[in-house]
Image (cartoon, rainbow, N blue to C red; front, side, top):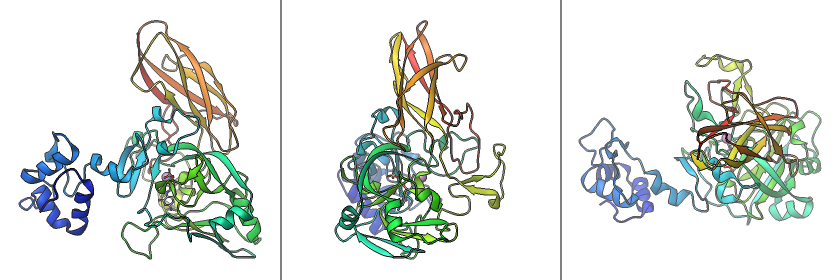
Length: 431
Ligand SMILES: Nc1nc2c(c(=O)[nH]1)N[C@H]1C(S)=C(S)[C@@H](COP(=O)(O)O)O[C@H]1N2
Ligand SMILES: [Mo]
């Protein structure tokens, strides 16, 4: 029998235990062998009760689909206002206007998972192994990390390499991130560099390899969902943390509790969550999502839609110059003048200036940009903007970094939809 009432957990359990039966009960699909579910009768009533309102396009719901509104309650616990893009694996982004804080609160920090969330995310008994090409392999508890190394707190920006993928044309497959796969929380931990120095980096090391405890979605214990690394020179810089706290509290389970790497300014995928092991290697790491076309772009500019041979892809290193308008929200109504503000960042660089246009890029006004609170943090900027008359305007925001590189107007297309750093545009109704 189909579960009753509002409990999405019941429906998930039902699907987990007997997917075929659940499909028949919930979707009544016995007579629909084309794999298109057809929600009707008792199934429709159950789903409607679960989401709390009518589902106008219920005929289009795919077989086995769990409405996002039901999934949210389970997987987004401790998060607030995020948009769920996928619930297996969990991927959720933050609308730009909810990223207005200088330091991103944990409840607003996006989630990008490639696999399942580990069952156990408790610090008790958790260890970090440091091995491979080191003089002294180590296995350290979180308490040992805290007592043997200097503990530091830093605001550090993490942006997913695929942030902005939703705007690629032709489209790129993968999570359709719009703007909100970026955040700058305050992380507390020890420096990766200090830990590697204590382990003793052998002279032939070229790359790190990061491993986490998250199971592969297939359930196969031999498979890893993701294992990436960085060049050893990058690993030995000052602002990479092995973090055990975010924003003054334990890490959120979805953000890698109890231990994770935070590699600011490089693709978020370098920042291994649920961190259990760092291996030093004498070759470029070749773990899952390091090779092929994952987190890689063609080594040369390509026209939109071009098919590029896999061997021409290169690993993405620093993330490009980018900014967000976090106030006002897109579509907001404002008076004849308003403050406009947001954040800007550029991997391994700083932001030198921010310019704002209200006339589709014809003229620009310089905004005030704060210095980063520390190396690796995004920079806050603001401007007072006055409108000549009532009507519809777009605010465009363009950051320029310390190497003189500015955000482009149009996407530099690549097959997997990475590195979209085009200007953020916010529509305003001025009266
Ligand atoms: N173990 C593990 N670490 C991971 C991932 C993952 O799936 N598993 N996803 C990576 C990717 S692609 C990104 S963008 C960041 C996102 O960090 P967040 O979920 O805390 O926002 O985590 C990275 N670390
Ligand atoms: Mo990512």
